[in-house]
Image 1 (cartoon, one colour):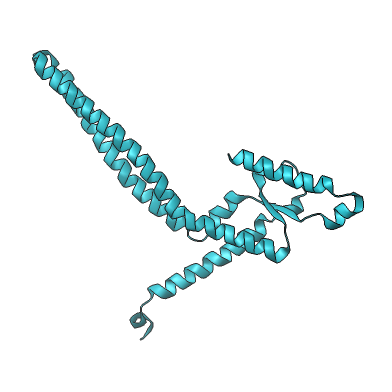
Image 2 (cartoon, one colour; image 1 turned 90 degrees about the vertical axis):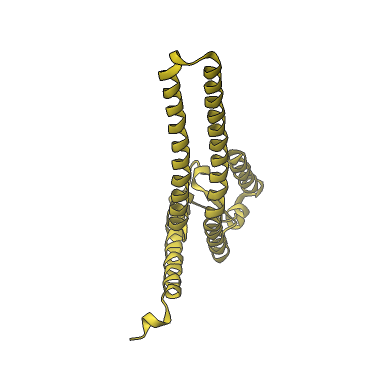
Length: 193
């Protein structure tokens, strides 16, 4: 899907440039620049907190799945150890119990994957929106018609890469956010002496 969108954007930008005649093309060409979105996300305000929250929650979910897996392995080992002494009915009952546990594990794993994906979207949504807002602000300020992701750029003038400018602005925004959060965390009693 992303490659279709990128191809459409590139094709549209190409059509705009091709459709313009001679000298008017250079004078009226829309300003198109690009950024490395991964570099922007690396410094985006709130990314570190979102990532650490997600990792902690994922670890807890993973621990639950590991415990379930260990329980299943213990059931299988116990069954194999005692299989020779079990009656046919007991064998069937244990096999059924193992299958039920394995199905519960598979269901839990699927639920975990869905929950993890949803939680990642919840946590990273505001971070990504902040990056989009900053890009739009810079686009308006500088009169850019289009800002592309560097992965969609096949060849370009390196002067069209505005990643460093956006990274600097995001770092300033992150520092401002950090300062405001630390001021909020300080209680009035700690600032008085």
